[in-house]
Every structure is written in C-alpha cells, then in structure tokens.
Image 1: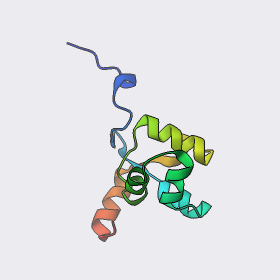
Image 2: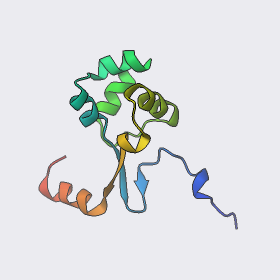
Image 3: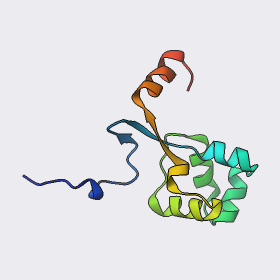
Length: 98
C-alpha cells in the first residue's frame, strides 16, 4: 500500500478535512480600492485570471499565481485563502445566499 504524504497533495485542492478552501481576493481588493484589471497589470497576470479569482470565491489559484498575488499585495497566502468551515458552508446553502 502506498502511503500518501499530505505535503504531496495538490496545494490548490478546494476541499479540506474541515470544510472548503475559498479565496478572499474580492474583499482584499475592495478594501485597497484596486480593480481586478488593475491587479492584473500590477501583478503581470492575465486579466481573465484575476477576474476569475475575484468573481469566484471557490476558484483556487495555482501556487505560481498565488505567489504573484502575495508579492503584489504585500500579504501572505493565508490572507488570500481561507477555510470555510462546514457549518458556515451549510448556513450559506440553507439561507440561499451564495
């Protein structure tokens, strides 16, 4: 039987043991008053990429893109990616708020 090391699992998997990994980029950019297009220019990323991350909270960027975002925004990966607990996820589904 092959032993799977957690360090070898894909970094960008959106499912975790405690819930779902979500990106927080929209609130970060809104607080800094930066548009997704502006971020694409600052971070040297495709506008399509930054718009997708901005508009889709369950879209998890690749490690390379995450690094560019963190370097540009002077933040840590944990500022952009959060774990939404199963209770929070259930509350969103039950309330109908997405």
